Length: 75
Image (cartoon, rainbow, N blue to C red; front, side, top):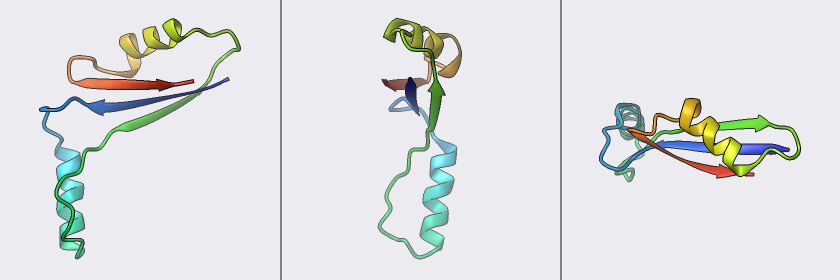
């Protein structure tokens, strides 16, 4: 079974990589980009029967730094 976990910085947390992308797009002539937030997408193949709670535990313990990041699970 495929699981996708999207991890993003929480609102209010500075995103230097996103700002670097926004700046680079501006220098390339894409003047309409006002902000960029960069995150990560993690795709996993897990055994059938893996529960939402187990995937949430994976996120809480390893995949996301829950102090500064939020995550969304898609099973």
